[in-house]
Image 1 (tube, helix red, strand yellow):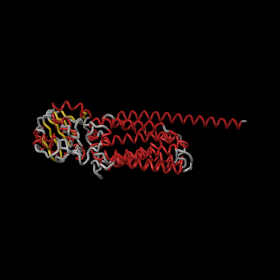
Image 2: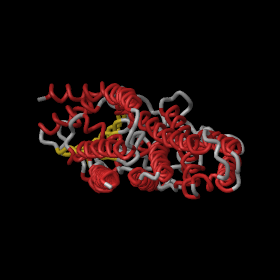
Image 3: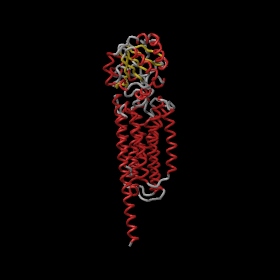
Image 4: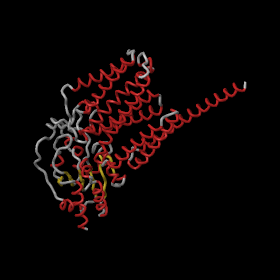
Length: 493
């Protein structure tokens, strides 16, 4: 009798321990989800972005720890190896990748996220169906919801991975940044998408043997990998901020689908957060360019043949100035607005700009920075770049707020920006950028445009600002020109 009681007590104790462990994991997941939400909220502002990153990092640590507790017995040698290798790659990338290459890094990290989700889903399929040789459809073996989300996780994850790789190659200029328009691309994409969905449905409902499921999943994976390539190849460099945020959304959706496969609530929540945030950011980018998402994906904006309309031809009325002349005009300026673009990032001129701003402020001028939502090659690129040079947060002004101020500004200094300051967007209905909200730099009393040449931006068209009567082009490397301006102003004191 005592033996029976002992076994009963042990069983109750084990059950209680299991309940306590389950409650602990659930509580940890809740804390992690809240920290993720708070972190993402704080990432929306430059001043709080660093703290937001810290919150998200803590949330991820709590999530991983809770998951390991939930799993129970695991081989920590694989965990440690993953942490060491992944941590080394991430740490080296964070330290060594320059700001000019940050869009490329974000793009490839999106790809890693999508690829990871696809691999996890495939591993579940292998361990649950293929390896044990289970018979029946995916719905019979895994359950209807799990089988459906497994297919979606593989599809979206594989698509995100190859699409991100193509985006990376375009940004890194390994392949042409222009839109590459393949003949019949829309039909091809439709066939790949519908084929993947059809085979996915077959796996879920009809397939009855492990071999049929295995071959079906292989077909879905290959079709999705190809679809990622063919979807991004036709998109030009001007749309890369939109593409990066959209692929980020895809990676979140893939992770959320994988959460359903694993039955992990936190993965479902965090993936949904990333997916929704990426989609919202994508919409913001589209509004900033006055274009629909469908037009971005299917329009081929930035193709080599574009640029036939909207102010094409040679420049005929361009006024240029040297650093000395520009400095003389800046000496009496009471208000100055810097307009950063990708050229500033390429020249690594952010610290030089900050020094010039300090000199101007020392002379009594009011200095601000006009930030266009799609300036640079990823959302928030200019904010991060200028924050790196310790530019005060309150001087970074968004487009809608700064635009009314240009008409009362003495000097606007455009550094490497092009399409986002082109007045053609406001009045030229033949221009490919017509209707796109721009920074109204042309309304300033004096405009200096610092560029290496009169080369076109991503839209491939002339910039009317360069020929405006109040504009002076200052040709040269942005960092060298800004440094020369600073030296001239200091010499004048």
